[in-house]
Amino acid sequence: MKDFTKFHFTGQKPQEEIMLVLHRHWFDILSQFFFIFILVFILIGTYGYVPVVFPQLGSGDFRSVFLFFESLFFMFLWILSFIIWVDYYFDVWIVTRERIVNIEQKGLFSRETSEVELEKIQDVSTDIIGVIPTFLDYGDLQVQTAAEQEKFIFHNIPNPNAVKDLLMNLQKNRMKQEDTEFSQLLSKKIHHDDIA
Image (cartoon, rainbow, N blue to C red; front, side, top):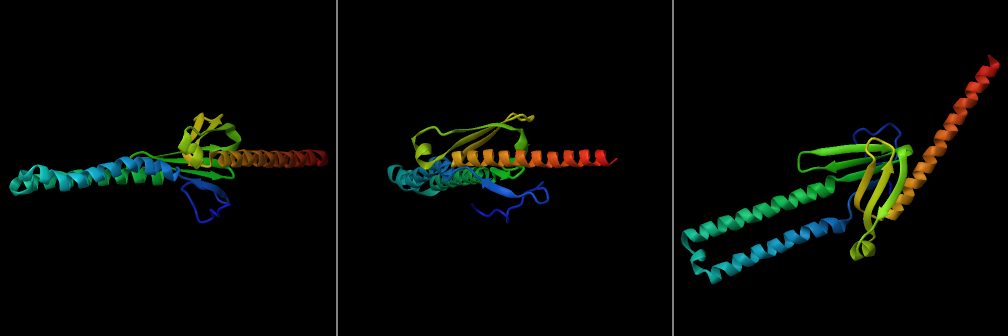
């Protein structure tokens, strides 16, 4: 298992150990960039092909206008690519020994953070749909909770079944730990009452 001791996040409790940091699968961002790549090839093609077909665009004021719109379109693609990358990079799910933290980037200047304690997990299910997700082993993981936010959905994460197993094991360990702590506290209380 990867060492996550170098990772820290806002709101992390003292001694809270990070078990897993997840981003969406690399194919998710690749599929989003595929459309951008097609548009870039079209842009390059029009730069070389349009002045040949329409010679008036290759000289004078028309050339300046043509280059202006080509540059404007390229800048639009660059900004769109940056927004896709920011959304991919800053959408993160953090699994600790105590809770799940979901940090979701919404646009460039908005971020939403939510969390759920492991004890509140009622059910964990995975959803892998399609040939490519099955072959590359990525998909959605849904965490049903008893908390205010009923569902946590991890979108297009790698190895969703392994993450599901980890969450279920962490939850069992957390419940055992709480039972042990409660038993010790109850034992101390009974012992204290017997002495008094």
